[in-house]
Length: 366
Image 1 (cartoon, rainbow, N blue to C red):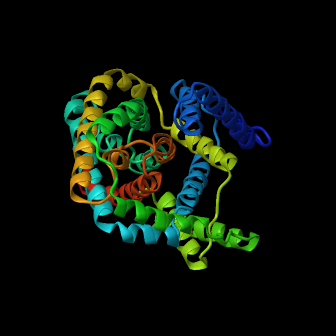
Image 2: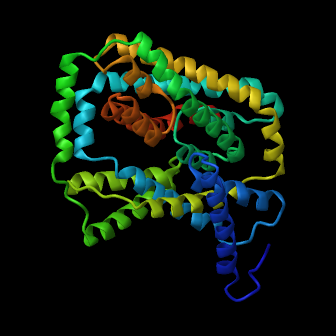
Image 3: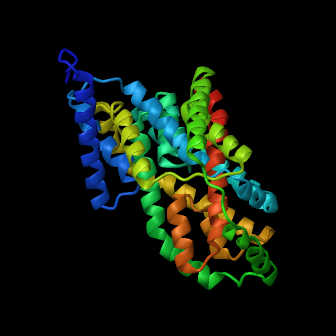
């Protein structure tokens, strides 16, 4: 759909597309699909793209802004308190990170081995099988021309299945696990009062500096050809600024949703009829990859449980479960696991995969 011949045509085209994306968000939210802002908008605008009715507007500009905004939201988790917690549990955190990187590589290669005869590229398979965030991995997929529809399908399947298995994981851990040691309990109690200290928040001037640093970092990383550069550059710039100022900033849920919808528009633009056709052959390979990841995650949890003082078995299982950070944190509170430790491990996993995994697989893709 080309409205460029009309006054304000591109603005109208963007508004129409964004309205379609917002409708997708509302539908997916009603259906309780994970990450509805991103996935709902991507699916509905993907239909426009696959049928040839996607309106014409500067999609690249929208994509850059959305990726940078995602980096800003990720950077808010980098603060001095997080750095102190990571240092106090450095060895188990690094073991978990290396283990999840290895599991992700194995799952990506498994997906490629089972689907390459059907036209699934190596870049698509390696990114689809990664235990990273949905939005972050799809941004990386855009940077290497992966099939984002395939990436989304595999990532959604993995997260939904793991969320469904969490109650059973709790039951099994309760039968097999042992109580947390008193030494660990006292350590956690000693650490938690830090969260009650008064937090210095960003002022209006700080926010202006943050936005300037975010877009400068995003532009520089993009210019240097860094994989998913806009997101990584924005994240690192914002995290370093927060550390420098020793302050913490938050992002409203509405801003996050608007950002995810904007990113969904860019992702939906990449979907075509060929990708939709590929989804029909992905169910069994995706199930296989998910089982491989589940097995690897459980083995990694047992290793952490037996070789470190991370906590009880349930906490270790939640630390290595490749589901979303927010869902794991909430569920940890519900079942009485150490949510502080689980959130820390998942934060390190997410940042580690975002920062290091692209450099691990990029030589294979060149």
